[in-house]
Image 1: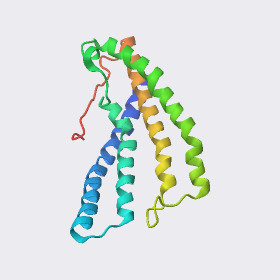
Image 2: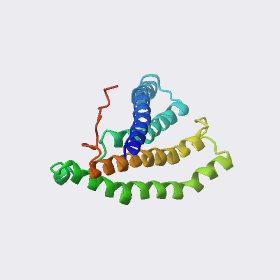
Image 3: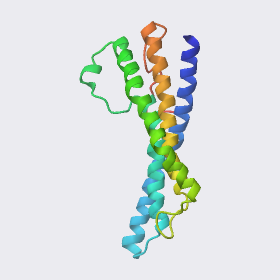
Length: 182
């Protein structure tokens, strides 16, 4: 079981590194959107590429940070009962949650979007609009990346839940850190 906890620690380290890197996309998103607004209202002009850039950065931010959000326990949950439970009770709930919701959702997402993404690459799909960014297949591929990141972090949560249930670990989130911490 200790080897599985070590594996969970490795997965957590990768998710944390990705989360720390993609958080800067939020700053880029604000600056890009601000630039689009200033160009439109102050100078009466716009650039389709910049407008699409907002969509791309927004998508990258949320799809790449999904595993990190699970790592720091920032996903939405009904905490009315969960918050009062023991660590072992929380571990059981998270174990069931990973097996019943997270992993099947990730599988369904990959299964249902594989053709959509691969068709985009096969067609050499271009920009959303004339003059836009020619990276639409890569934007769509983020769906698969997101499913993978969530599934891998779900596996880490599953391993940690098993460790708490078996008594190998005391807490589910031993090194929970907020976005501002390194």
